[in-house]
Figure 1: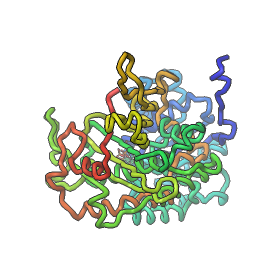
Figure 2: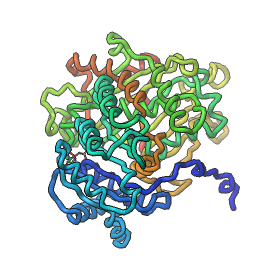
Figure 3: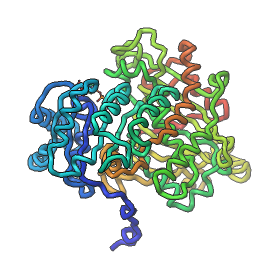
Figure 4: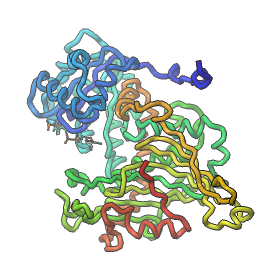
Length: 512
Ligand SMILES: NC(=O)c1ccc[n+]([C@@H]2O[C@H](COP(=O)([O-])OP(=O)(O)OC[C@H]3O[C@@H](n4cnc5c(N)ncnc54)[C@H](OP(=O)(O)O)[C@@H]3O)[C@@H](O)[C@H]2O)c1
């Protein structure tokens, strides 16, 4: 056995064991169910960690039989599964656990029908252990939870046998106040620990690796602070425009769609203090502490600490945002958002964290770049000046997941020439191409009752608290010509000025 294999350390011993249960998907005929949930559940059914038996009940308004739902899902699986069409025998086994319940979320009679279906088994575990996955509009979350409670299907932990959990999708509220109200409505029927708020970014291998990278390697911790770090850049760029999702995006924009959740979650993992244990609450305590340390801009500071943009038509003939279907022709919604944040704690005081996300940028990529301070202005730096690059660690979250350390090296030859070189760890090169979908991991954790990868109530509220002042300032000001950017460019001039104000420049993800 190779030494690296001997040194591999599995932490699964402490893992909560997943128990047989019924998963009830509200929104069973929707896009999320077909594209993400069913492929993930099918793949999980092939996984040794998945419990048996698991029943899956779909709930939606459209009338159809369980057979018809199974046929739809089989076809969708062929289209959306990373492994293509399912193996017929494995599909038959999986399909036997799928049942459809037709009903309206707002009608009490539908819950009687659901209850009848759930009771139709001799296995107590399938009757009592219930995971309700709300793949429906957030405006329906509270009603669904309330009616499940009235129907005797959803109880606060300890008030009924078995367990019940509720999984909700983003967006969780549209500002801090609405998030607080939603939290208050849901926690009338379940304890916070029964609520699993999904941010699918946390299901990604590379995002989970941030904690492992930071806290299982002794060499990084001493340099992970204001002593050595000059600034940090976190980017989620997308090459596509909004396409058919114009209606949704008009209510959301880049700030609510990506910054409030994905970018702030990555920021929290990158900058938080080491937790006291690997327990879900210990990790989430540190994340929320970090989010609360982020300095919230005053209204008059928004212009100097944030930049927004909206894409114009592309040279490839792709439409401008305002020409997309279901988008208002004078829309003020940002398709690009950049923030400069400061974290007011001892570790990070004075270090800018730049967060940005945009649509119709040159490529689709997510990465974090930790830019270290330059060397003192002596020796090589004295001669090279700004040409001597400072060191940087880049965590590439997607695609081509990996970690790159940028250092300077001597170009071989008789002259003394210095050039940046990269030391690279690539997931694919090291472990092969297999990376499970984020939803697989998240569903497994929710069924196991481990909330580490889900967002706690105070995290959501703290995150909204950071972006709300920016959103409010932007909503009061119409977009200017200076904030428009050409599709296929890296964003508006205002964003370049945001980083230049501190002597920095955006370091764009590179095609790999
Ligand atoms: N799609 C994604 O990739 C994605 C990603 C992240 C988050 N989300 C979130 O996930 C949720 C679902 O998104 P989606 O894209 O799947 O939406 P969708 O395609 O519009 O599906 C909505 C589902 O809700 C059901 N529904 C609506 N009103 C109902 C009612 N009164 N009673 C019973 N069922 C009702 C619909 O069923 P009938 O039409 O048959 O009634 C349908 O199955 C949303 O909150 C969305 O923001 C989606």
